[in-house]
Image (cartoon, rainbow, N blue to C red; front, side, top):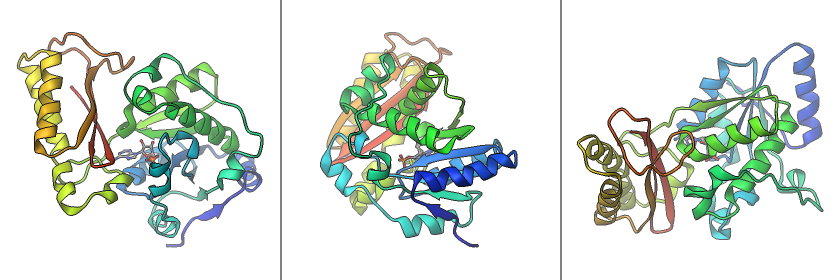
Length: 283
Ligand code: AMP
């Protein structure tokens, strides 16, 4: 199967989308930072039911990285990504340079309040400003009708839903199920940074979160459940736990008490060496 067409400028992107819209096509956008895995591909499959043409953007967005080392080391594998997209419903890849996205003199920032003050927002200063700014720009550049974000980045999905509503952007926002590896580890571009022994440790993340959910269901209180999970992660070989939090699934506010049947989400970030791993599950 041929690889999809790739464009690098906003002008080229716009002229293709204009043609599509002229034919009455509904356009879908799947924003990614590349190093594509089956989690990304599942988003393409999911959005295909909601549109006629699919654009995958590949852009490692410097504005959403709070650590330069993380940005420098982020995997970039464009040729492999194009091959991975060859067997999918994606028609067009948009892979702009940082200069194309952020021209000289760029100073505008989209900043979402409330939701971004906790969890990833509290742990990664400026991260969600970077995400909200680039996603708004990608939506504007592509004139997409629908766009999809994975539940792997649960807070990011909530933030995108928020600013799309607040700014009246004419885009339908979809959420995609979190895709896991065989042992339950959330698929992530960062997993390639794990050595074989670290990868084994990482496989325990989801098991420990499932245990935390079982603990909650059997009556352990929220603080004890979170602390027990943190301790279990450290005991099994994680270097640091940024947080394990049981939150309201909509507002992402930390819950104080849990009673069975209550809507709740467990969200967690733990590190093995410098590799940050994210996971979350419905309670
Ligand atoms: P990224 O390239 O990591 O910025 O991710 C691009 C999109 O893919 C985001 O909407 C992510 O939430 C989504 N994504 C990444 N990993 C997964 C996964 N394991 N399952 C579902 N969606 C994912």
